[in-house]
Image (tube, rainbow, N blue to C red; front, side, top):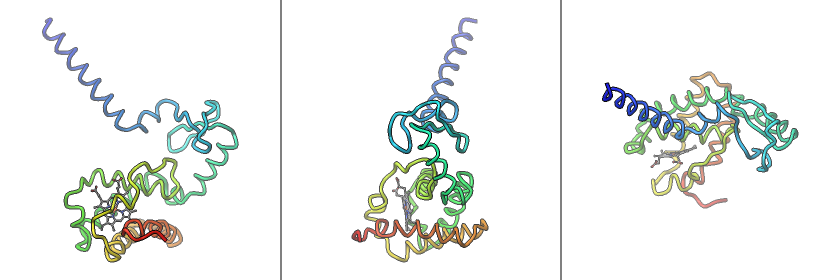
Length: 196
Ligand code: HEM
């Protein structure tokens, strides 16, 4: 009996550790359940916890009412929200990499790359670039693509796959043009060209 109880205690302890590790690996998972950021996303100053807004199931706090108004308006006006927000962008990135990995012009670049990580990073990068609520905290595009020998042909192939993905998803041409404009802002960095 003693042995069974002590085994149960060990199993419970291990389960708790695993759940905590999973939550720690995804800060958003924690933030959705409790309140939120301590620093205002607009001013960088400490927040007033009574000034909050909810966005995509997550609660955000702000330093002042004016910050909240500005931030909420920025979300509403964003390309991110016009494209359909997190769900739509995540789905687009999944479909995009199906195309990329079937494209002989570029698929070999991803031979030794963890595609789970790549899809996650690309979702985060594009979400931030389109005006989503979370900043990009990964590598800058010049460093991320340094030494790969990328050319115009490769960049255009990636852009073409992105455009075709959005067309498949019936995104309007007006929004596709805006996505392309954002993608083009990374071109000199991705191709390692001198800054203009
Ligand atoms: C619109 C242009 C592009 C964007 C926005 C973009 C975005 C990104 C991002 C966000 C990462 C992850 C960076 C990190 O780890 O923090 C990445 C990595 C990578 N990108 Fe791109 N990329 C672009 C073009 C290209 C092109 C043209 C190629 C090759 C055909 C390419 C191949 C790769 C590869 C192989 C990695 C993984 C590097 C590694 O983990 O070792 N990317 N890219």
